[in-house]
Amino acid sequence: MMIASVETETTAPVWPNQPTAAVRISNLTKRYNELIAVDNLSLTVPTGKMFGFLGPNGAGKSTTIGCLTGLIDPTSGKIELLNQEFNTNSIALKHRIGVMPEGLGLFDHLYAHEFLAFNARIYGLEESTIRNRVEELLTAMDLISATNKRLADFSTGMRKKVAFAASIIHRPDILFLDEPFESIDPAGVAMLKDWLRRFVSGGRTVFMTTHVLETVERLCDDVAIINHGKIAWRGDVSQLMVGGKLESSGEQFDTLEALFLHLVGERHGDLGWL
Ligand SMILES: Nc1ncnc2c1ncn2[C@@H]1O[C@H](COP(=O)(O)OP(=O)(O)OP(=O)(O)O)[C@@H](O)[C@H]1O
Ligand SMILES: [Mg+2]
Image (tube, rainbow, N blue to C red; front, side, top):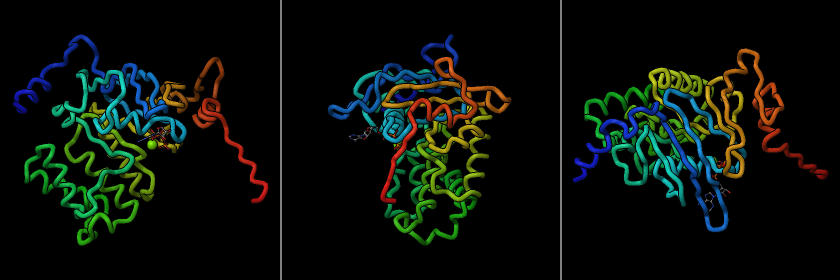
């Protein structure tokens, strides 16, 4: 039964005349009791994009990623990934996505190679492929010398690297990354950015959150800023690189930071005692 439903889901897109959207969100809402974390949000991200999902703390970014990856049940709305409707039971679609969630989702009692192999087996990779990819990933991430430590004893950045490796080991079509570079050393960040550039150049899609606007300006070619669970701005930041300006409500901004502060408001805390 399971195999039959998987085969049905992986057949041609339901809407063959539409260009493939990696992510199409229609009127997504997530409520936590009285709090509306994601508020009737609609958003489409085409395939092949490095998409940056920005917004202040508590804006609803991680909640949205949770809904898009089956980790959180939306209250209402529709999600399509790769032109197929997605819900928590979409097993075949889940095989085509990778996710590094905000909480990382590691199993602390495992060793890094065990955790990566476990993830790869869930996605049905062959044992020889798993062995090769686990070794390659751990070596590239400078974690091969830590194979005698359980994940509970890893440093913060090491844990982040393992979670990143787990999200890409099966070569997904869409990669969801929640703050992928936070805590990782500069050499590691440079390598991961290279990997992500190669990933999207092959036509696959990255959907990531970050608070580092410089990273967004250099890396992302498609951006949304959300605030209070709603889209506040949507655009292509790469226009900045050729001397263009970012526009919002008729006003123009030289940098993403200026636009971001305009949209979400600057913070001024006057700590007289400091
Ligand atoms: N499990 C939960 N129960 C209740 N409220 C929650 C829960 N998870 C998130 N929230 C609330 O939903 C809102 C959005 O949270 P979310 O984690 O999506 O924000 P975020 O944009 O990822 O923020 P950050 O940049 O700090 O990671 C916040 O007000 C948060 O307190
Ligand atoms: Mg978050």
